[in-house]
Structure formats: structure tokens, C-alpha cells
Image (cartoon, rainbow, N blue to C red):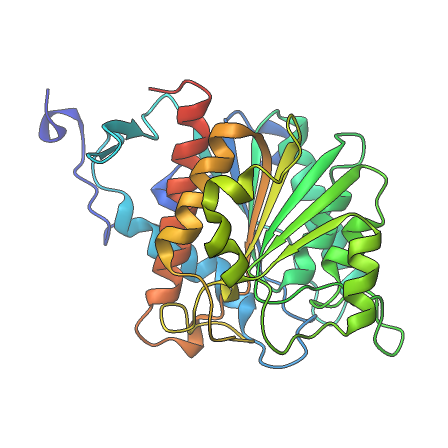
Length: 317
């Protein structure tokens, strides 16, 4: 039976733009899936250019590009079919964001991630600025220990700025403080940073392994993955500005000298093969700064490939 006989063709430009055109589940108490995607359209934590509140919507729309057919995605280089229909992915919509209310907005994001974890699914959160990682990690209380792999241009280890402790420059500091976070591997950190030297000193003292893009290239993806403790459950937080702005200009704080596509993809594939990935967030896509829409396409492509690697490693064929 071919697609024409199996039902509607449902081309990418047709229909409602859920992530990957997968089913929408409105009731967070009725999630029955392997993966649940949550939008976190919050950008009150930005310190320069806002606009990441439109990230979830743009990444969902971009993800429809990769929604052809029902037979999974065949990769001829790996001779593998990724994300067959046996991998159940649902989109549970967005956390409710209350304008100017960071505490309640973050609480709503945390509630969404907790609902996904309670259902036994893998949470995938699309931001939003990087502060949305704070409630994501809070949701893992009782699920640890977890190790965080951060791919980013910036260390994000500021303790506070004028009393603000939950901006997009502080999520890794807040994560390192959690007793259920066993350590951090921070990759792609480069150039003039938002975190001062005392932040780097604190990060290393609190268990961070910090690598620049050039240090990553010297080690290779296998060498970097090998630095993550064996047997660790890994939570991956991917800031789109970890990529070079030549391929990902749609972000609020671009930093030249970043990763190219296959560098990140090969690291994620290696981590999926060597560690248990328990959560993902992808943040800081601000689509208005990229009229080509390439940034959100990159984000969607990375997420779908990473999910393919994770479930292929778990035996999905």
C-alpha cells in the first residue's frame, strides 16, 4: 500500500503546524507518547534583542518541511531509518505565558515538563529565551541525578544582575545549584562573553567542563562525548546561538565563530549512542532576525535528527 492508498497525502504546506505535524494533545493528563513537545514562548529574560517568544511557533512551522510520508526518515549514510511510526511523538502546545510575570510563567513551563515526565515521555521544550531552562531543570526534581550538556556561545553562569537571578544569562548557574544536577559539560563557549571571570571560576568549582568551539574541534565529537561521565543521564540544552550566525542569524545574541551543522549533529549522535538522553530544550530562536527562515529550519532539523538518533539507540527500527 502506498501513501495514496493509506490516507491523505498531507503535504508540508497543508494543515495545522504542530511539531512535525504530529498529533496535538490538549489534555496534559492524557499524554500517551514516547516524546512530548512543549512550547515555552517566553522572552522576558533577554538582555539585548527580544523576539524568542515567537520561537516555538516558527520552529513548529519549519518542522513541517520534514513531514513527508509515513515511513520514517531513511539516512543513506547510516543505512538507517530514523523515527519510524513506532516512535510516538505528540505536541502538547505551549505553556501559558503571563506577560511581565516571570515567576508564574516559569511555573507554568515547569508544570508542562512535569506532566511529560509523569507520562513517561521524553520532554522536548522549544523556547523562548534560555531562562526557560530554569523551570525545565526544576521539573526534574526527584528524577536525578542528571548531567547537563549545554551547546551555546555563552556560559550563562551569571549569579545575579542587580538582583535578577532568572534571566537568560543565569540558567546554568541555577542548574548547577540543584542537588539533582551532577555536573555540566558546556560546549561552544567563546569570545566576549556575558559571564565575567568570576562566573567561569564558579562554574568550574561547581563541576563544569567548559570547551570552546576550537577546543571541541581539537577533541572531535567522540572525544567530547567521552568527557561526559559514563552512565550519566544527560539533559541537553541547545542555544541556537551556539551555531555560527552565518547559518543561524535568527537569534538575539549572535556570536561569530560558532559551530556548523554537522559538528553539532555528530556530537548529538555520539551522545545518543553513549548516554541516556532524558530531556531536551532548544532555545533563543528569534525568527524576526532571519527573513530567510533558515534559523528555524536548522532548529527543527536538529531536533528531529536528534530524536531519531535517541530512539534508534533505544532500538526503534
